[in-house]
Each structure stands twice: as C-alpha cells, then as structure tokens.
Length: 313
Image (tube, rainbow, N blue to C red; front, top):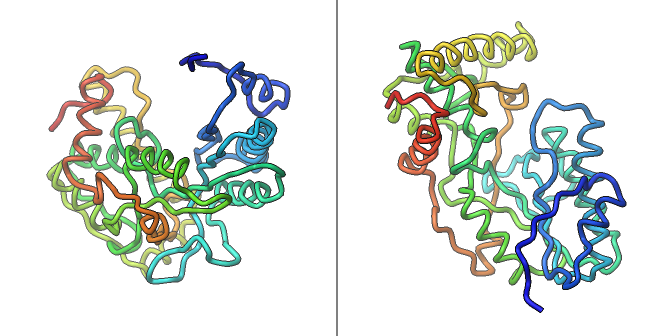
C-alpha cells in the first residue's frame, strides 16, 4: 500500500483526539513533534497544557504505534557558564524561561515511556523565511529606527551570545537524527557562526543603514533595576509599536503578522550559547554554517513580496 499525503487536524492536548491523529492503516515510521506552544509571555498553565501535556500525549501514542523514532523539538534556553557552550550532558540544567522549564519536564518524562525510541533536539534561535517570533522582532525594530532616523542603543554588550540555526539546517538535522541519531539521546542544533548580539546587529545596521551602540552590563543593570523589567519593556514596546504602525500605514500595510513586540524574556541578560560538536560527530553538516546579510535579506524580501513588510530598502 502506498503512503498518502493526507493532512489531519487534531487537538493534541486531548487524549482521545491525539489518539485519532495517530490512526492510520499504514502506520508511521517517524513522529516529529513541532506542535507545542513556543511564544513567550504565557502563564504556567498554558505551557503545562500546550507544551508538556501535548508532547507527552504524542509520545505515548508514538510508543503504542512502536514507531522507529519519535523526535521531540525541545528548548536550549538553559543557563550556561561554560566558555565552550552548553553541552547536552550538562548536569542540573537551570531553565531561563517558562517555556524551557516545561520542555525540560517533557525531556525527563520521555525517559519513563516504555517502548519509545526517541531523540531530543535543542535548537538555537531558529531563523529563516517565515520567522515571526525569533529574530523577526529585532529585524522589525531595526526597520523602525531607520524610519525614525535614530540610532539604536541596546542593553548589555555586543558580545552577548545569541547562537542561531537556519530553519533549513534544523529541518536537515531532524531528518538526519531520524536516521542516524542514537536512541534516547539529546543533540544541540546550532550553526558554526558563534552569533552574538553584536554580529546580528551589525548585519541589521548594514541592511537598514543605521547605527547602534550598547549600554554595557553595568549600566544595563542600573537601568533594569531603576525602572523594573516590566515598565522598561512596556516603554520600549510603546515606542517601537507606534513607529511600526506609522510606517506600515505609509506603505498601505493594514494587516501583517510581524511586529517589533518584545517580551521581557528577550531583554533579560540571558546568553544562548550552545556546543554543537556532538551532532557534528555523527556526520551532520550545515548548508548555512553562519548567519549572513544575504540570509537575513532573504527573510525581509519574502515578507516584502507578500506586502507584509514596508519596501524601504
């Protein structure tokens, strides 16, 4: 019997609905879970249901089906003090965000599911065409400062780690691990560019012909402490959202899924620094080993063609 490309829609948080999603005459070789909540700013209850419960429901059904492999796309937002980057074997992981806390809870639960062959992937910041919540807010903010004809001044330092992975390399890693990953193992998925806040913003400054500077760690701590992170985020978002609204209005863009909104997690002094040697040791190679100006322009131009981003370049 030949496989089909039939698409099913099911509410995976509910056990019965999840079970129906796995009903198939042929069965499945691989199950890849990309379905969980990924946005910041939600309550614990949302992540408990939309991350933990959903993922475990899918994993248990995959185990019942005796699939060849279940791939869980997790989070890499954990505290890292190593200069060589967070390794998969690092003990006593400390989640930096509520999302990471519940993703880690899923990882620990997978170990207890009988008959489940699984692989966990922890991706860095995922960027590429279609991105809306990873690097896109930073891209939009740079566009706003171009419109305002102002310099950007950012919290923390330019060497603040923001490791990245292109979406197509992440997809390649998923398939690679379906075939080559070791059972019940964890792999970081990160490019080789050692992306920092400085290297990312240099690309954005080149694209939008703007200037940026940094407050530095000490001054940033004073600013955050004096205003409070919630008030600071509200103030920043108010300025950026107003500028974005005006700019979109000038270009007759009445509805767009992208915006400059920042959550408080995105302004904290968190470094995302991963060690990707383990996956590379299995033979995985990157097609986009480093973030470039051309790859960021590809994202922007794609939204421009859909009339969702102002044509100001």
